Amino acid sequence: METSRVKPGFNGVGAGLDGSSRRGGYMGGVGAPAAGGGGRGAPVDACGVALRVFVLAATLVSAVVMGVDRQTRTIQITLADTLPPLQVPVTAKWSFSSAFVYFVVANAMVCLFSAAALAACRRRGAVVPVMVGDLLALALLFSAVGAAAEFGILGERGNSHVRWAKVCNVYGAFCERAMAAVIVSLLAAFANLVMLMLTILAIHKHSSYY
Image 1: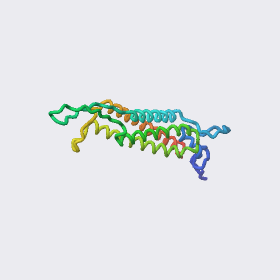
Image 2 (image 1 turned 135 degrees about the horizontal axis):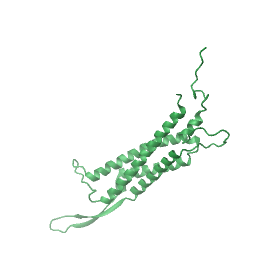
Image 3 (image 1 turned 120 degrees about the horizontal axis):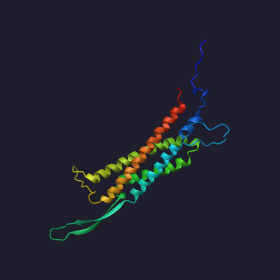
Image 4 (image 1 turned 135 degrees about the vertical axis):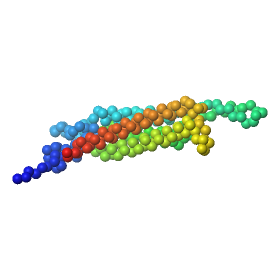
């Protein structure tokens, strides 16, 4: 007589991995909570929490560094050869660039979301919103980094085709702080990517039938 083969976890027999255990795995838990615990909170993975804290801190630093970035230099303007040059103070500020404004807003939004996700990391009902938010945060960070980096390269090298002069040779400190903010935000984006990859692997591990 042929014995029926039922794969563990397919109908809940033998594995004990139902929907709640998979949800717990996404929020950082290794397995289902112990029987009789009576708590609704899911176990928290230290690695996931550490990555999320890093994303929160890095995006906060990036937004603050870029948000306070400004530099004033005195530029000499010659109106005529017979007249002495004029000394005109000119200020470079992050708000003068739409790319930098988008960068600050995107990092601030991801920072606020990371704080909210940390507060809700033990709630099973927050699994789907947190997952969707992580995907949106990843897209925001990479798009903001790309926009700010492109504007920074333009300021560093200029564009001879449209006769845009480079400005980082004049506003060196401004460009250095902006580049530092972009690098920190890029690290936060990669940390968010690693966190999502670990999450996907955890969900696959807890829902695999093989």
